[in-house]
Length: 256
Length: 243
Image 1 (cartoon, each protein chain N blue to C red):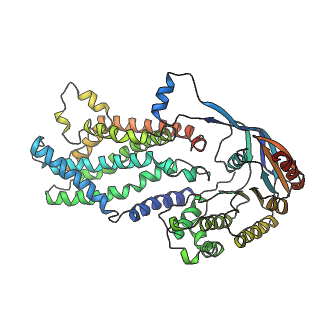
Image 2: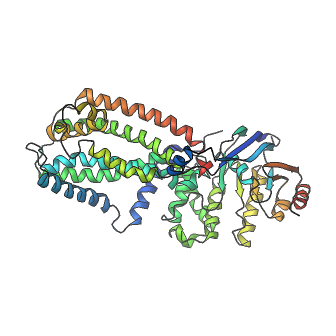
Image 3: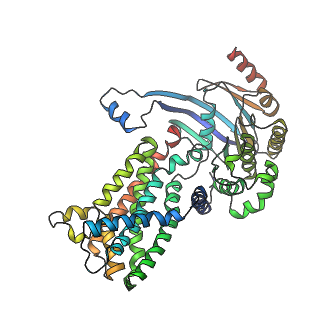
């Protein structure tokens, strides 16, 4: 069969559809993309710097938190949206033969707009808190690609499974919250007791969050060994997730 | 050229599971119970060939497996057994509201749907006016499609589908929605497609459309082919079946 699609055009059209529809649905539109992270930041900063007093050295807690919260919220938003993406596009699944991978992928890519907006806010914060823009910032794309691989792998698995077990979407929120507490987003990884350290660093997001902090705030190189582990983890999950997705995708139209 | 087979079903069967467990609670409960999922064969051992340029009507009562056949041709479903071979650019399965996004305008949806169906942005820009004209929606093209009537939905869907210029057109019982004027326009368009040597497969409950438009008909009953051949013969068999 000759190829029916220009996948590139399709990818962009579907991404723009997501972005445009989101923008049109609510009065505040994309203001939410900034307001929600700021509200999170405000509440968490109050709790963890005034009530619990998490030690963050000479870095103010809000900026310490925000550097990790921005990529974490991107993970939460993109995985949540990708997980529901097949069901949300059920009319396409049952009518047109299209590479189904494109649905979770565009769900993730459309969330990059939110990420970009929060990154701008982050930069403003860095100026306000007088955090120097370090040369190690150049390493961020590398860390981000590892994170993106991890997100995509998880999204493949969850979006395909959600077609057959519709409550995955409901459980996901709780799962992501637990995951956040087990990742050093709200606290520095130095606070993890040394006997639990290995356990915490099995979590592929721990080195990634650490790497963001090191490169953005402290101007330090990330720990190559730990980040390398995350890279291998992400890559394996991406490949396995894709294989699993392709297998299940044959039966999407059967149950939708 | 005309006799080249472009769609071939080789002993195709399609099984669905009745009462599939779609929630974890059910899955957990059922884990301790004997397997309760029932299997259901929507199609059984289907064999047929369609040649390039043929216009084929598929008829049968509701639930007989007609739509499953169309979905297998469209490549949306995968057969459980057997093989489905299709050569050529297939149009979308024309049903109501294929992939329209309710919040977006008709204009945005034309671009979106056109891309989903394989047109480049440039091709779409060239065809845009003609799509809107055929669908008779010039006044509503910037209205979100959630405010469209079912007839407007169908007109837009049909118009986009024929403008992507497919070699195989699949139509699932949509002509029923449009008014008579638009129905006539659709049939005219289908006739002109047919005269260009394109293959058209329609599912219809309107025996008028099948007998006037189709050269060949297939009667499906309980997932099996009952009759294939000239429309008059097949319609007679259908009428016998339902009485």
